[in-house]
Image (cartoon, rainbow, N blue to C red; front, side, top):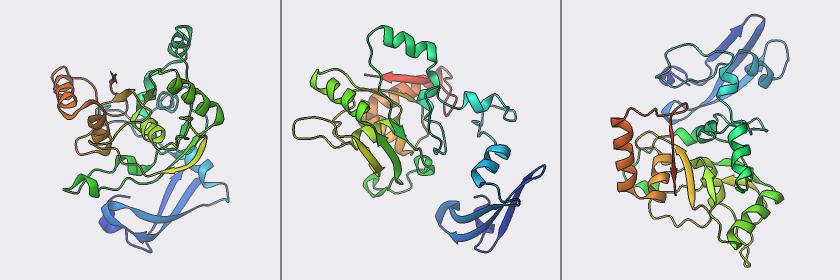
Length: 253
């Protein structure tokens, strides 16, 4: 919540659009603008329903216009199924139904997992020693079908390509059985991947361009190598690539 310094415990806020009102009360104050808040609606409807009605899609700063109805579809992956993430996994925005069909026709197997992207994904690294940074927990689910597909890929020595850094974190959090099988899982991940991490499952990655001092950029550097990544970013800046949510992506293999 911003401006964070003014929003102390006991402060109440309201969000209105027509006859829909969401009320909030600050219950606890934390660092860097974070607050524990209680939300309720004026007419007893579910808060999630009210947010869906009056909320706005957060556009990147270089898109100089208000959000539109079409952004609700554009700022979403074509394969999304379960609502809970605070943001779309941006690497997945590059995939269309036609592109996924084309990949399948070429024999590229696809496996879907669920990871609920949390606000902590965007938390900058503020500590001097990288190891002291903590990534906030995020919920993930790896179904039996997805685990079986991952197991087949490992046993057949096929490359597993993760679409996005958040997907990478979920995959690298998985438990491998003694026989090398991937176990279906449902839980939380606090895994912070930075240079020095040994990747066990992921051997390729599709990812957008990330902010400096972010855990996401450190994950990419851990996978591809710091100097290679910095070189790619220099070229991206020179060629005026788009960064952030609606930005360009790169494939790392």
